[in-house]
Amino acid sequence: MAALVGPGDAGKRVAEIEEEGRIRISAVRRGAQTVAVASSNFVLQEGDEVNAVVAPDAIGDFAQRFRSMPLQPKVTA
Image 1 (spheres, rainbow, N blue to C red):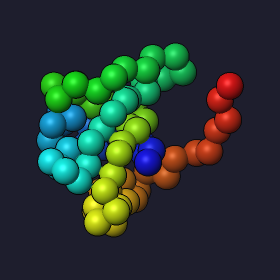
Image 2 (cartoon, rainbow, N blue to C red):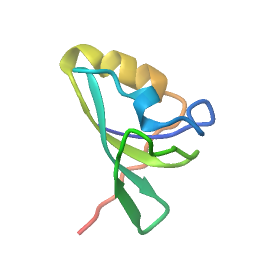
Image 3 (cartoon, rainbow, N blue to C red):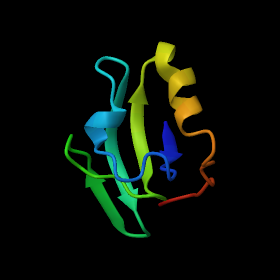
């Protein structure tokens, strides 16, 4: 799943968003070109796109957390 980081999660480390066995942030896109494999100490900024592996029972929690920042669809090659 992908979502944009809003002001409420800006400044938090990836470890503060992840939940063992439920939500794992795998990569973060910042700006047009920067993509980083997410480490637990990576600090999120507003507007970052997080790409996550989310367990079925955590989809609602993940969607609730990022509900105010809809991700704009895009096509990449």
